[in-house]
Length: 127
Image (cartoon, rainbow, N blue to C red; front, side):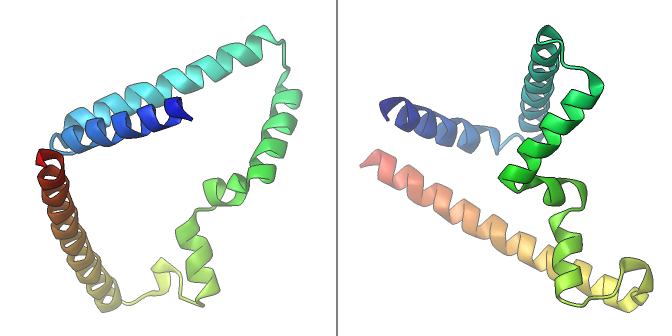
C-alpha cells in the first residue's frame, strides 16, 4: 500500500508541473504509451501468440473490463445515442456553433477551477 501512495503522490506532483507545459506533457505521455504497447507486443511475440489467439485473448480482456465498446465506438457516440441526439451530420450549423460555444465556456470554467485547485494545493503544501 505504501508503494501505491508513493506513486499516487509522485503522479500528482509530476502532473501538476507538466500541466504547465502541455507540449512537453504530450511528448512524455506519447512516449509512455508507445513504450507500453511496444512491450505488450514483444511479450505476445515471446509467448508465440498467433494473430487469431491475440484477437481472441484481447477481445476477452476488453469485454471483461468493459473497455471494448467505449474504446471502439466511443463514449460520446454512446451518450448521444442514449440521449436521442441527432448525428453530427444531421445537426444544423447553428446547433454545432452553439455546442462549440458551450464547450468552450465549460473548458474555460474547468481551467479556472483547475487553477484555483492548484493554488489551494500550493497553499496547503506551504503549511
